[in-house]
Length: 353
Image (cartoon, rainbow, N blue to C red; front, side, top):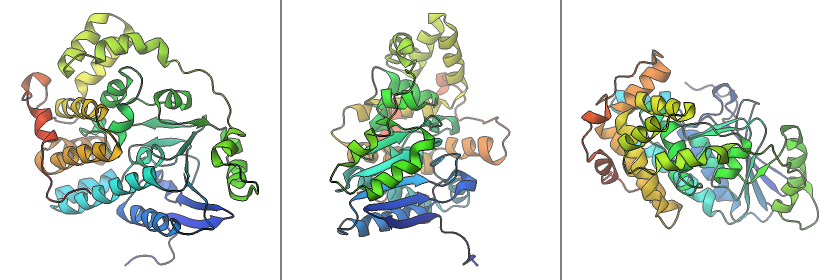
């Protein structure tokens, strides 16, 4: 039995000209489940033809983050209990929502305050106006659990400067606010103590000024990102054709950062790394987000239905928390050379779009 008094996991309301969607699961850093995705989709669908709603705002409750991602513990339980079709239904609904946000006919403003990772990037990264704060921590950390970036993350990563896309995809590293703007994951930095004033201005400003101009009134130039100082060694290593050669180049460079990156990659799931490298490079050549989502959908369901590393990664990191995953295979040397192609060419039972 469900608790009828429980707070809704998505707060849906209008304020002036603003349609507001607030993820309301702060105890889980607003991790997404299928019901939340359905609520978001229903509200966006209703507001398309609502002339009172001129701008849509997506944010998260609490001060820890907008959205830590999908509910991967629930995902683990579905797969191990033999309900993989429920998992596929979740991803279809989530990716359809991601595309809807990107293609929405009214401006969508997303506030990626605090932790915004995985599925949170799917909500915030494709909005028309993407706001981060000094507290923002953005990432696509899927390789850390033996998985691959999705929710259109490969589309964003594939368009990052140089080879930063490969670097952030494979390592799952975190971006600060200035990093996110530099990499194309965000547009504006607004101090967290000005967010309430920004929300009010978006809702009640009477003149016809567009939301981008309103946001600029609150924008504050952050400290410069330090990423350009790392671009040379990252580009040199991550332009290599294979994951094994990327690691070899990192080891050969001799710098502390390169060596640490090589060590990090050496402990991650070989299959996830190879599939992820292939996904980002494929997405770089796609004409639009939907094609990237379809490529991700094939790979994600290949992991769900064909490969054990996703379940093992979630178990080790989030269920048993022993931090000792047993990857299959455990090393790149033992990995079939066509692993990336196998995931890329997987045919799901149901199409995405």
